[in-house]
Amino acid sequence: FGHKAKRGSVVHVLSRDVCGIDILGHVTTVRDFLDHKIKEFVLAEKEEPFYVANLDSIFERHLRWRTNLPRVKPFYAVKCNHDAAVLRMMRALDAGFDCASKVEMQMVLSLGVKPDRIIYAHTTKPLSHIKYACTHGVDTMTFDSEDELLKISLCHAKAKLVLRIAVDDSASKIRLSLKFGARLESVGKLLGRAAELGLEVIGVSFHVGSGCTGSLAFKQAIGDARRVFDIAKSLGLQMSLLDIGGGVSGREDCRVTFEEFSVVINGALEEFFPPGSGVQIIAEPGRYFVDSAFTLAANVIAKRVIEEHKDEHNDTVNNGLDRIMMYYLNDGVYGSLSCLINDAAHTQVEPYLNRVVESGEQRYRSVLWGPTCDSIDKVAGVCWIPELRVGDWLLVDNMGAYSICSSTDFNGFERAHVYPVVTAKTWHTLNLSDFFNLHQ
Ligand code: PLP
Picture 1 (spheres, rainbow, N blue to C red):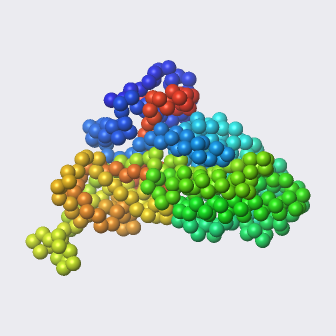
Picture 2: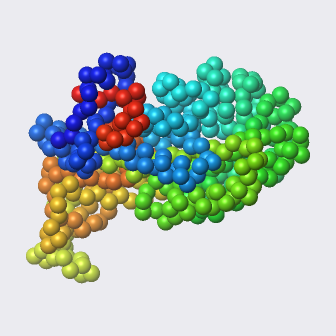
Picture 3: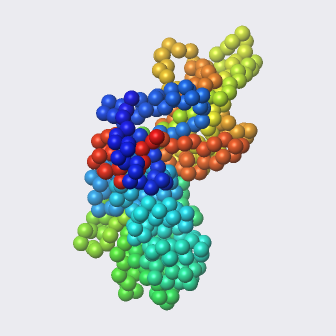
């Protein structure tokens, strides 16, 4: 199974906090790795949930981005998944970073990322976090109100400010402009106030909302940003940065593909910010990079068979009784599946067995629960699946976005561990030995 390339020669040059990684041999797939890991867990009588993070998937996404949006530099949104392997991979890919807080800035700076590769993209910041940004050279930050300008003028007068505007986000599952972003009507006043305070505003940002399902939202928002650039020009200000935010899905089964979004974005950039305009374009993608890279493995820790009196609308009957199988997994909505509660773009998950299911295998009405004592901790409502046994493993794909970052240890259930894997080809192509340690 797989191989661990040149372990000795890599480990000694790396600091102790570098996170581990497994390198897949030429014929080993991520699925093989998952199966192998599960066998290893069974042998060791371990049952904790875990993720496998496929870093090749992030690399493929990066290549797709470069091909389709060559003018737009991604600043990865750390909030979406701050796993150490993800951050290291994004650094190896030479991405910038969108940080929302002091801790996120610390995480990124500790990897040796230069502060000018960070945008502090939160419009309502604690004073102490602005001070941290100032003392650590993180100058680029967003704002959307006069009060924020006052705070920034007090503790980071040299900041390079980006005015976040509210845009039409009605096509998105998570609407952010309800909470953030200045209205176009107030832009002139805000720019004037910034000038009075001696602050430099270098550009405009927006976010069309997370889990965006309509590409035209980008066209409209880029047009709105153009209006702000024009207002600034009329006030004698020359802005040079456009930040088109995040919002694009990272799943292969999404309604609008990344390529379709790219056509609209490129068209709008050509129209409103053509290459000769002198405006640098960046974005803050989160879920686009990580969603499909993570697969969760969770264990069935308990089972109950409930027998109810026959429901006349349902013909699955056992001796006049309906059977409902209740399964309890060791991960749920307080853990990795927090996305079911907090990420409207992720309304359901489809766990599947890690073993082959025969087509003729009997299926039962089943409910999957998480491990905690809370009844909202439900992973999947009624579904028809083969009978499971305690100790069986279930897999869930597309678990990279807004999952691990918002999981808790409620009820004392541990957060899932992440096992990053990469192919030997990508390991060598990107010189990942400079960024990672090999798993022992
Ligand atoms: N930038 C900001 C300011 C955000 O609030 C978010 C998500 O909430 C993102 C970027 C990342 O968005 P997504 O993961 O949808 O690409």
